[in-house]
Image (tube, rainbow, N blue to C red; front, top):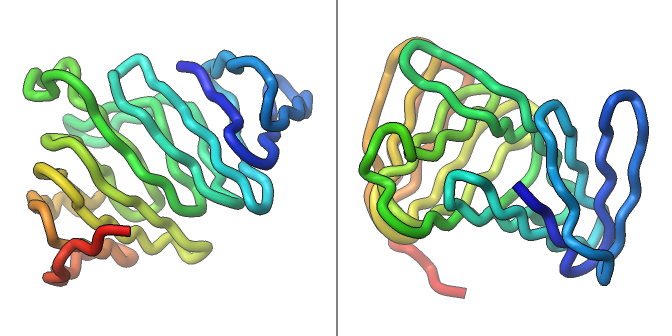
Length: 168
């Protein structure tokens, strides 16, 4: 896909090189195997080829690297940080489903908007704003999370928390 730095800075590690970008630069083509690191006080928009927009927050770290866990495949790994995801168009077809991997879960989009946070211990916190998001762990646990709910994936388990969606 392509990334745009809206505020702050972006560092991309690509083929052993460190590329730096700041707000105001043109759109940046993102390639497989890139590692993206958002700087402090940063907002980056990533438009993926799977019709999903990702807004990366400060200090977020993402990697574009294909993965396959059971039947789940995808290209984006969230290593650390907070991001907002929004899908556009029809995401019901399996071939178009957007999936994201964290240290403790695979998140599959069946809906339209969610906020994702991953901390340094790998805990994955998913808050669904609109639609349905499917979450599965490497142990095979799977759950669909609907609007207004939050799911936390710890080491090898899922913990369901009901929390009304807050609008900011």
